[in-house]
Amino acid sequence: MSDTQRTTSPGTHPGTPAGAPGTVPTGARAGSLAGPAPTSRASGSDGPDPRAYPARAVVDLAAVRDNVRALADLAPASEVMAVVKADAYGHGLVASALGALAGGATWLGTAQPGEALALRAAGVGPDRARVLTWLYPPGAPLRDLVEADVDVSLAARWAVDEVVAAARAAGRTARVHLAVDTGLGRNGIMPADLPDVLDAVARAEAEGAVRVVGMWSHLAFADEPGHPTVVAQADVFDEAVRGAARAGVVPELRHLANSAATLTAPRTHYDLVRPGLAAYGMTPVPQLGPPSRFGLRPAMTLEARLATVKRVPGGHGVSYSHHYTTPQDTTLGVVPLGYGDGIPRHASGGGPAGAPGGPVLVGARPGEPGGRVVRVAGRVCMDQLVLDLGPDATERAGDVVTLFGAGDGVARAGFPTAEDWAQAAGTISYEITTRLGARVPREHVGTHVLDDGARALLARDPSPHDSTERTVRA
Image (cartoon, rainbow, N blue to C red; front, side):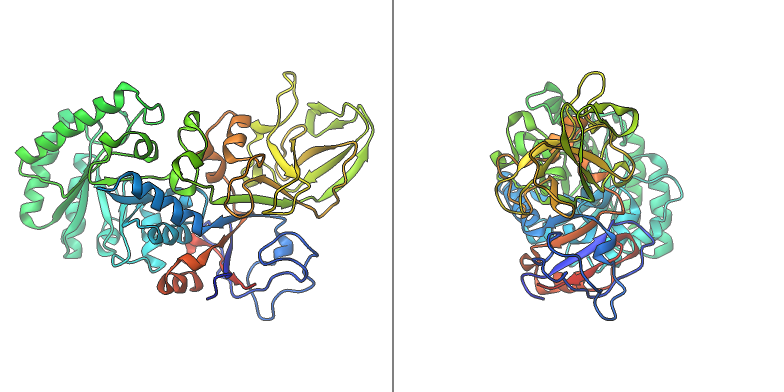
């Protein structure tokens, strides 16, 4: 596979059929939305027809690798678990996991068991990475996890019993991590309940049913650097670890730090750090500056092609309820992306308060400087949003616009960011990338940073979770 090879998948959701090799549209640069539409699909290809998807999310695996390297440098005494839950925050589960491993991560973290099993099914075996999963109800497929050599978190007494039963049924020792609620009030064992759980775990470990690999917790205010609860939770965590030792349970790894704590709180690094958002080049602490302050660069760029460009008179209402009215004769551009694709409706423009809509870069070739930023005009609809391009607009139908990112994973001044969209929508950047839907193909570039084995995994038919993938050659 060449350095310019790319993999493409329309939204990473279960049930999408597997694809096959494809080609780049004639007249377009490799992987670009720009240029003439293709006249035909690749001979014999049953992969997605690029003409059917007017937008794409480009994910630079070189950026993922470099981000993980930068994070590892911030915690030199700790291992790195790249958190790839929620389809790697919308970036593509398997490809992003492989990019993170190329950057030095030795662990992968998933919230749900299905994500962990999908990694194993895709060929990411324990020889490549340990995988931890932590969020499941009673009756989860724990035996499958044990047999797949996936580490399982224990957050309640019933979970101990179910994991022990699964280990006995599988005839294998389950690898477990004890989750302690040190103050977040979410998943995890309350300190008052810990002695009972530790007693059960100690007996299970003596039996050989479990191996206590880790003990961990999660921070409530890590994105507010210096907040007193960060140290307070670390103190509670330390006492929980000491209590476990008194009960004869000694975890091999202690882990507490998420992205924000990895960036700002060395006290919490312990034996392993768990960055999620930061691995994809975004910062959970934007109040401290852009991602570049920490050596991070955005991995995702969201692009679309204008579907309609037309002149309208001043005073013309735009989109539902006319929350925006053109102030003068102008040009409108329709972008075929909407809340059905994950674009937040709260980033609509106009309304009684005259709120600025989400920012969109127009008039620039993907990955190149130049262009100008305009705002969403009127309400974001299910399938489309409208831009007021201004009275002197030269854009045409088919031109590429960028909602966020620079087209090559390199942040540049003036380019909209996921954080900009988060501010326009009154949310966080995590949500902007994670909510991108199944109609937005993920195209993975920068595969040259992967080793031969990892590239071979991407060339294989994907697991059902990882959706359709096809290889596009330059």
